[in-house]
Image 1: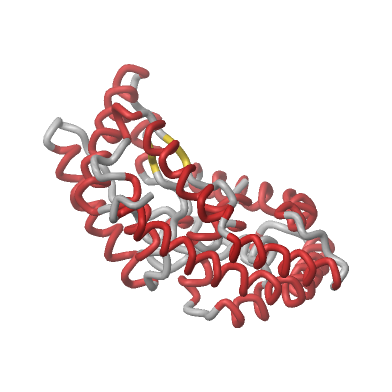
Image 2: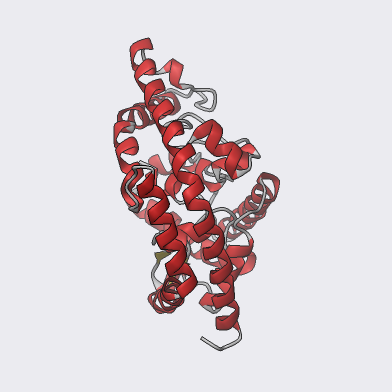
Length: 292
């Protein structure tokens, strides 16, 4: 299930919603101060599709060389979730909402150009012993740590691999932003806007749609796995190849509901997002200057 990736469309919104992650300090923590990593991630939050794919091409080239140095093979791979859907489609946020709503039920079978649904390294791993798999994965993790330090955070992706110390520091920065009077006021304006339109102001309001679409996502992912296991390319697989006409009609109703709701709720969200990004940048600048 990919709800968290789909819900955390913008980097700043994602960080505010708690989508950042902490990894073990010994294997995944970048050497840079966390505020520097956060600033780099913010700067790359709106990279276009070509810039994003170019980043991953660089990373993959470095990973291939790093793995080969220890005698391991690695097939370059850009995951379908590495490119934000809106950015992949080249749409403004207003255009995206008009066409796809939140992107929860409307883009289940969408594959951003240049990406893949399934990691091609899976097949090679399936033929290895447990010890070999452990060695391969351990080396890949070390190589990824190197690429993190060399190329910085990935564009469009909210998940930052932070050590516990970095995570604690980042939490303090987010806390300062959340407590800023401007952000507090903007949150209240957003809440009022949503509630006046009859919607829950909580972040979980889209979970109903996500839950309703679960069988379609799960069914499609099963079809993708079956295609890959049979040696067929899953890139061209579409919902119409997987579900009956009755099921597709049910999904169509969900999609219409989602788009109608998002067209009402997202204009309440955008002013908050814009303000949050502005204030977040201010606090990052303070942290970088040693003032926070």
